[in-house]
Structure formats: C-alpha cells, structure tokens
Image (tube, one colour):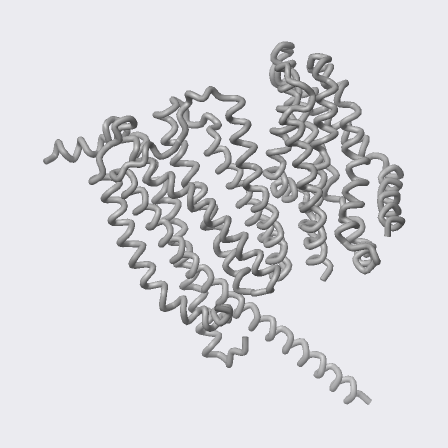
Length: 58
Length: 256
Length: 223
C-alpha cells in the first residue's frame, strides 16, 4: 500500500518535473480564481450598498 | 441574441449560469486529474512524463482560444459599440495571460526531461512566449489609459492588430525553427493520438474551459458592478458641483 | 488630395530636419549598440561575423523605437492633429504620410550607415548588399506597425516604454525574415530568397493594416 503510493509519487523518476508542473498550474489558475472571487464579492457588496442608497438608473 | 447585450439581463443570466459552471469545473477537474495522474497508463515512449502533457497542451489551447475570443469581442465592440463586448475582452485578458503562463511553465518543465534543458527555443513554446507578450501589452495599455471608453477602444484596436499578426508570428517562428534546428529534436506535442491519452487530455481541456467560463462571467459581473459604482460616484460629483454653482450664484445675487 | 498628402510628408521631413538631432541621435544609438557587442562578447571576429547581420537587424529594430513615441505626439499636443482629422484627406492617409516621413527621417540614415557597422562586425562584403536590401525592404514594416503603437499611446505622457512593449512582439516576423534573407545569401542562395520576399510581404501587409488601425487609434484619442 505504502509502496504503491511511493511508486505513484515517484512518477517513474519524473517526479521533479511532473509535480512542479501540476503545482504551477494549480498556483496560477487557483490564484486567478481566488482573486476573481475576492474582487467579485467586494464589487457586489459595493453595488448592493449603492442600490440600497438610491434608485439605479443605469 | 442582442437582448443579452443589456447589462441587467446579462447579470440575470450570468448569476444563474455561474453555479452550474462552477460545479462543472469542479467535477471536470476531479475526473480529469484522476484520469491524468492515476488511471491513464504511462506512454510507451515518454513514460510517466506524458502526464505533464495533460496540464500543458490544454493550457496552450486556451491561450490561443482566449486571445481569439478577445479579438472577436473587440471587433463586436468597435463595430457595434456594445459595452458588454468590451467588458468581456477586458475580463478575458488576465485569464488568457494566466493560461499562457501555465503553458510556458509546464512546457519548460516537460522540456527538461525531453531535451535536457528547460528551454530550447522550440517553435511551439516560442510562439506561446510571443503570445504572452501580446497579452501583457494589452493589459498594460488598458491600465495606462485612465478614461474607460478610450481604454476600451485602444485595447480593441490593439487586440485586433495583434490577432491578425498571430498567424504570421506563428508561421515565422515555425519557419525560423526549421531553419535553425535539426528535425530530430522532438517537439512538445501529443504523441500518436491514442484513446488512453485522448481521454484525460480532453477532460483537462474541458475542465480548463469550464474554469475559464466561470471566471470570465464572474469578472464580467465584477466589471459591471464597478462601472455602476463609478457612474454613481460621477453623478454625485456632478450634483455637488451643480449645488455649489447654484449656491454661489444665489450668494452673489443676495449680496447688495 | 495628393498635394495635401505630399505636403504632410514634406512638413514632417522639414520638422525632422530642423530639429535635426532626432535622426543623428538615432544613428549614434545604433552605432553605440553595435559597439557594445564586442565588449559583451569579446573581439572574436569569426563569432562577430557570424552573428553580425542579426545584431545589425536587432540594433536597427531597437533604434527604430527611439523617436517613435513622438510620431503623433507633437501634433496631438499642439492641436494640429484635430485639424488634420477634419481635413479633406482621410485620417488613414495622414497616418501613412507621417509614417513615410518618419521612415525617411529615421530609418534611411540607419540603413545608410549599416554597411559601415557591418564592416566593424566583420560581416563579409558579399553579404552587405543583401543586408542593406533586407533593411530597405523590412524596415517599412517596423515603421508602419510602430505607427499603430504610437497612435495608441499618443495621449500618454510616458508612453515610450509601453509603446515598445506593444510593438516589439509584432516585430518578431520582420526580424526573422530580414536576418534569414542575409543568411540565405551567405549560404549561397540568390538575392530573391524566401526571407527577402517574406520581408517584403510583411511590409505590404503592414501597409494594408497600419493606416486603418492607426487612424482608428488616433480617432479614439481625438473624440
């Protein structure tokens, strides 16, 4: 069981390339997703406050 | 179709779509990663290193797809002046640059065991690098122009000029590459299309696409909200100015 | 209309001649860049002669960026661009006229001194005609594509660096075609080799799109 996991992690000796490749993709795309969600939430809250403050005519 | 060009209707549609797209993104990534990393067999030539292809090749596809989408939106914006098209182009650019960066980084990591170095000026990767610079130029230009409408139109012109140049750049780099490199150097490319490779490749491509769609809609919503807030702030300033002016006029009249 | 077109070319050339420094400094920058090469690489003549044409091309490309940000800026700032925009000559042709004048004022001096610099880099004499010809055929593409970038950044106070970032990726094919035209001659191919023809094609392509895109970019800053 443990050996199987280690064998998988070793990626046939290519582990120094395979895992960083997946890590880079996860960091860049995950970072973009996190930034998108954070800015979306902030903008939605501000827009909602605006809507409550007065009638929107845009 | 043009009914979606109304920002309010777009928001309604987008809010309904995003949860579905986000769920699809999660499911596709779960299935794609499982297949790419665990279930699919190693390639008979490249061994386990073929697993890097599943994050690299779809990222290159997305890099080109997103730029095409930006150019299409830019054309719609320039010709029909649809503000929503500009919102889409602006929202897409950082996502496209992100996929391009992933393509470059994973391509370089995949190249190391294949070529022995991280970078050999392979035709494909070099074209993607130039595409990355095009994205950076677009984002920088939009950031440099303060006026929203001007920034939008300048970005649209640049995206279109860049887009018509992409095939030429691609051709010239391929040509340059064949002149300078022995044909024996293997290129970063899908090996013989086999079902065991095609399935995880397409699953990851679908996951990337779903992620892009989700984030694009969220960024477009963000932009629409932000424009509303800016418009309201402008109205407030205009109203304050008008009050000041009438106040001054009244004060001047009241003076003996 | 033709008179107006020529008048713009003439006016820009006169302005460039009166300011003078622009073209002279461009040539000096070009020469300086090439002079730096042996310092960076060592005075290895076989190496310099091998990379010489490519280095001349790259230095010329960089030098062409120098005065580019001022292409429309002076006219934008003093309002003459507004006048040109409502003149009977289409703005597209105004862009073309100014790009032509700019090419004559900045690129032609570079092309004229390029054989001398190539000599410094030990480029064989047999390659010189092709080097000059490839620059003559390719640099209009640099100028025209650069004009689009200059139009896009016309209202920006510090647009020069941004302009370089915008147009350099578009210069990639021009440099590839130009350098390979010279390499083909060195390899024994004739003057009418694919590199030269593709470089010519690139200039024609830029001639097709640059006036359109440049005028669209100027209009958005004037509107």
